[in-house]
Length: 164
Image 1 (cartoon, one colour):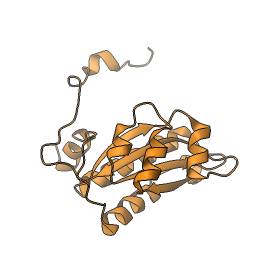
Image 2 (image 1 turned 90 degrees about the horizontal axis):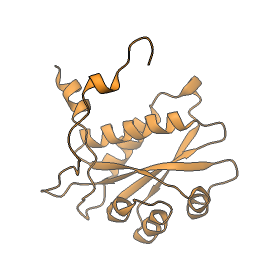
Image 3 (image 1 turned 180 degrees about the vertical axis):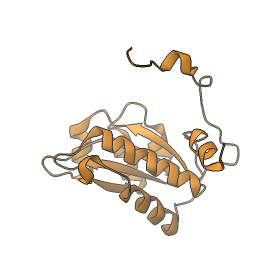
Image 4 (image 1 turned 135 degrees about the horizontal axis):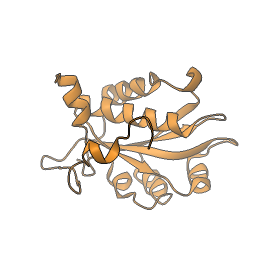
């Protein structure tokens, strides 16, 4: 298998970060990779709110149920669905953010924000805009390891051919 393939299947969410801010070079590269993510009908119905301030990160963390990584992050990118946006596209852009971050040595973790009106209030989103997901970012602690429960299910349990 190619190194590219191994990189993709080896991507893991990390939740423990150094307090070092994300460099402008790395943040711009991650956002550029997000911008180039494919989208339904190429509408690119998304925008991004980069949150770096500790007080704002704490407010954003209150908008979800499992958001300790938001509080611990150097930065969190909130993925905003513009009017007409699709959840599927938000997921695609989140994965590109994570892959780009990993390529730069930046750890990341996907986050679900459960209280959408609270997110809209915290981020100042206008009417018709929603935010369901965010990706936390930070340089990994030297001993950081993914908190995985086991490995992956075997393909035979996941894949069905022609019909379920």
